[in-house]
Image 1 (cartoon, rainbow, N blue to C red):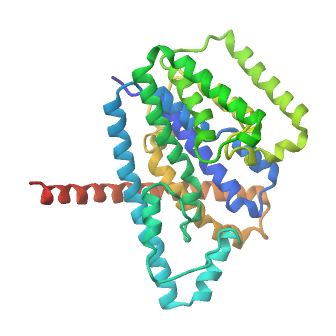
Image 2 (cartoon, rainbow, N blue to C red):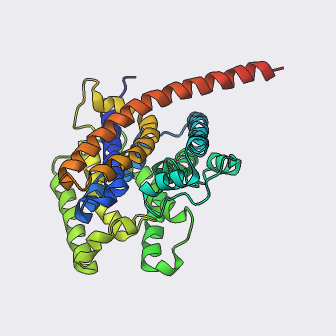
Image 3 (cartoon, one colour):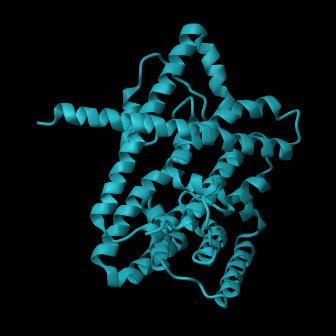
Length: 362
């Protein structure tokens, strides 16, 4: 079966959009206008959950094996990250001083400035990362700020495959339950549950809707209707909440509330409209990113942390829009280079694990 390059292309575009979002919302907080930061959320993480739904099936063994491989790759990465963070602190304390390190970390802003720098490894942080409790990595703060997506993805993939396997005739019911729960959480915000429930209720609906779209094509007659519905929802949102809601879209993302849900409809509609309509026939730069999306997702957390130092040095001397373009392009280049290195780290990690398996096998 030939690989659907549209899926790789869409994943690649979604990854490039995530890099732009993190360019705008992290180091961009120092110089990019709020309006541009909000517009960066038009193509956001919901696309990944939709693409996962399109590519997922009812094979439990295959899904669990894929998730196990992803968990191991994730653990290899955070182990590598842990030691990079630790060795940098040892380097700073050995050759410079605690004040120098604190000044270094202050570049990320007071919210992410390290307060307890030590040459003693904080092993509990590594253990928490393994278990998807994303305590901050001081040297690369954007990395753990990005990983909320991964925990929700694991949960969605497990629930999704169980529903597709054991309730194949009732998928629409589960979609309805998720949408009703999301609506109830928003109507009665005092009952909006903490933790992952709010995320899963909305994103599982997207996952399952996308799975129902698998192999299908939206008719040309429906396209203007769908975009008209999206436009009407946006108009209602600004009428009901007022124009100031525009600046609060990101606050309504964690967990997803009605304004953010409406804001994400345009990108999701575009994804489904182009599915089985836009034909990608050749490999290209974007499909390469899509094929290696997880390594680019890991890498952009590191690159988006590194560009802070360029932003701080240049933000007073260059117009914001020129600096934004420079930083975004540089962020992509760095993510490309770092992702290639992370793939090699991943290969090495798997070889070490295989060696350990052979040594300990009876």
